[in-house]
Image 1 (cartoon, one colour):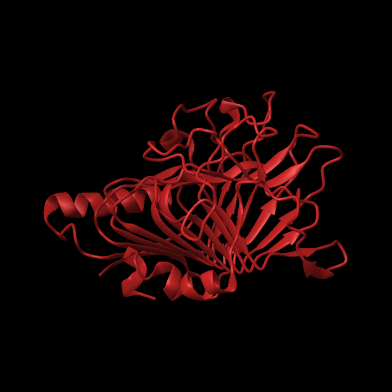
Image 2 (spheres, rainbow, N blue to C red):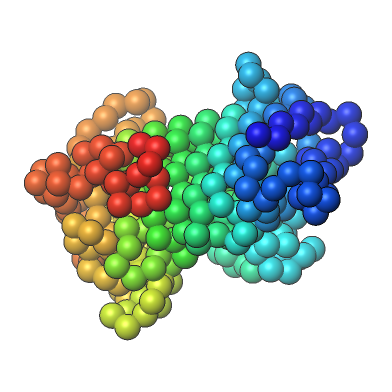
Length: 336
């Protein structure tokens, strides 16, 4: 294993570390399969970075450093750099294999200025996982932004992470994106009172999609506009290879500030596809609602989107009662 220690004393320190790894591969000093371990000292790293090497990567804060004290941040958006891979603070490219991120924060500090509920120009990912063949494990991480904070593909697992944003801030063309014991925070829109949406799924057909397990959904109150756990693109169909609205909420706690409809579909003017079922679509089990005083009660599901599915106890114990049941048929099977 190649181990590199990085600190904030020199500008572009993480970028320089990635460059050094690539140079060592090119020179033959290391093979392109040698695992790489990057240890980040505490501090703020003002960089936009991209890793696209096949070497397995573990990148983490130094022992004892909390995520809030080790921060990668930048102001980046579609206004400055076009395309999702160019407007993100941290991008993992299609050549990566197995990547683990631990105990640091990735923050896009962009402040929204354009009109509309999700203007393209204000798309500003903190993190993009543009990979369909490898795996991503993020543990004890913080991902902070506003619009489009997390862009995902392929297989990812977020364990005990904090994710914030104000609209469509968890989205992508995924096979399986598993969020376990996470805190999801819908924050205020800096421009004023606009609707808020957490998840925008364009999952691949017949795949599990986005699964939130034992996670908590917090929210900052809007004056008048509604807030939703999800919204549809309305592009999924029986013949589409992706754009399926596949999202599962399992044993989740949801702020009472969210709409009881669960998913926005423009008053049924957009098609939610597929109809929720045990394996895919919009589905939930054992959702509880929390008020501002911390009181918990079972969610009232009578106003749910008509395409949503309430999983049974049999469904739960058959496929969702543990991380093993959820991930056993994914590339994560080897480590669960």
